[in-house]
Image (cartoon, rainbow, N blue to C red; front, side, top):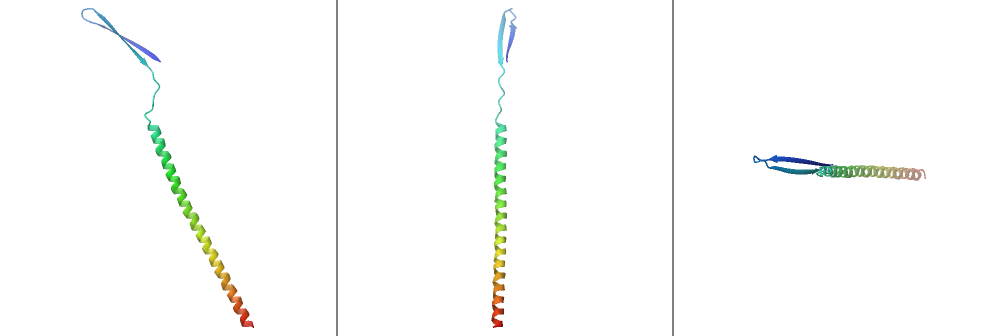
Length: 93
């Protein structure tokens, strides 16, 4: 939208001077603060996701180590059982 303002000035001698100003409404422009806040929030989400994924990776590694140790205990128990059977067979002969 365009607005025109006309100002008339009279001097003491009776002379008239006219001054015309034209104002144009321009679209409002942002200073970029919104984009900066968006970038900071996005970075925070990415860093938080990275640390969350690292934490769950450690949890999986811990679970795998416990499962492997349980398997080793099971194998050791099987070996003890086999040795006991061999000893019992040797005593019976």
